[in-house]
Length: 436
Image (tube, rainbow, N blue to C red):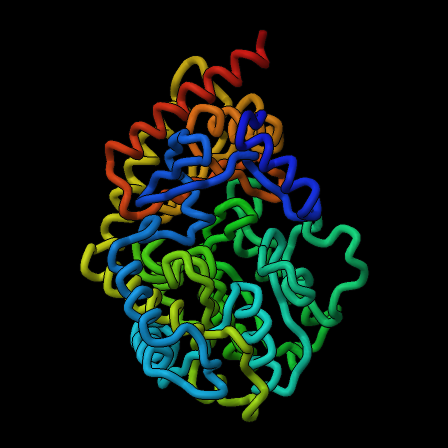
């Protein structure tokens, strides 16, 4: 997509001022956003199917979030929770403790980013168990910090050029039926790992996303999650569930792990927790959360008062507007529209698989309808063409061939259908141009 005018000028400034490692999907710059629409600095309107990567589940600039933050800003913006605490932090912790499906009494600490939540969950698990090892999964994404990179199951672009990763991290294959990888194979691989590579008594934690985010929106099967829970119980391993992208009504339940009936020991959260304000959390069993001593956890900005005010408003909005149910309606709408594209004569064999859990929806683009022939070039072209026509799309996947849909849960059916009409036009154009 080519920038013009004001966007081009600002893109030139960005290239001079900001390192290339911070990748930009669309070279246009936001000026205003409301609900599920964004306007750029040249006045062009965009329908937002990305929600800032699942951050504004409650929509851009929700009035209740704005009001809560404005009210807090009248009082103070920062004291540092470790210097002088405040009620908003405690109230939000109590509310998360009440809704997160972990076992027994629970406690919560707030941080700033998803990666920071992951780092602290691993620290807490190590402190609790006295062990050093961590098991993660291929295709996982857990952040760009050193431990986050080590846990992430995707090399390009996240690990390239950054040298050695933290030690004692192991990866299991994530089972994806579409690619011929079944749950039994993963559990067998874990058994082999414990017999050939590492003593289970050295493993502090196993961490898994109930739906892989950056990895391609592959849904963890209930039997996989139940098997991990059983194995963790057998060996005294802490089960960490990463709900950074899946949390807060996105999948049709408050948290995606609820679809399996499994109760993790620790849960990490971020993104949609505070409606666009930087806030993350680790919630878990009180006896595990209390393992680090005083001063072992914390951070200057963690649980910022403005973000906590926003977080409390987000929980109110999810309940008052019944966004879990709305997520299921949105998911059904997306799947129906994508199936129409999949079945259309002009796009035969282009969409290989459709995946959805609530409003966490993806389509996998392939050549000739074959799962082992990914089409990342089409995914890239589609994202750029959609941007040109006023639709914000996100791609993902280890093979770069998945389009993910993360529209705000407050979007109307009419807006979603308008966006899908744009998507349909873009797909037909991109496929036709390649065939010409």
